[in-house]
Image (cartoon, rainbow, N blue to C red; front, top):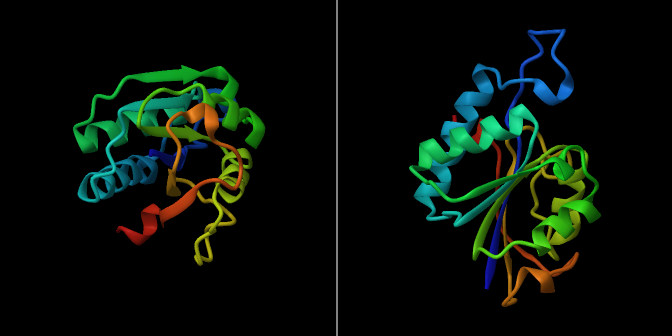
Length: 166
């Protein structure tokens, strides 16, 4: 079995209007969201042994904040190809993984569409299809290798957003 922790980056700041989109940092609410999601993952024993994330500052900070909150030091790879990537690109990056539990953090609209397409059972949650900042989905796959996964093969175990944890 393989498990995916799919997390959209946390809430980012628009305070610095000269910063490029790629270089926007998390705002205070985003940093709090990292702590909340990290604590929730730890409580439910959803611990990654591999992390892949977009190179965008807000994705880097999202993983760092979640990792600190969990006390998790899983190896992380930052992939420029995950920056505003479509679902097919996200799938390809995931298929190249070798951990048993992978945390992947990226951007909308790609990550939201990916979450919808990867599972066979979308959750009955009014926010799932909008996939807001910090949205996190736990998806299990009955496969031995990530290379064997495809759209519709996952079973969604859980979906949470930071505002439900406040």
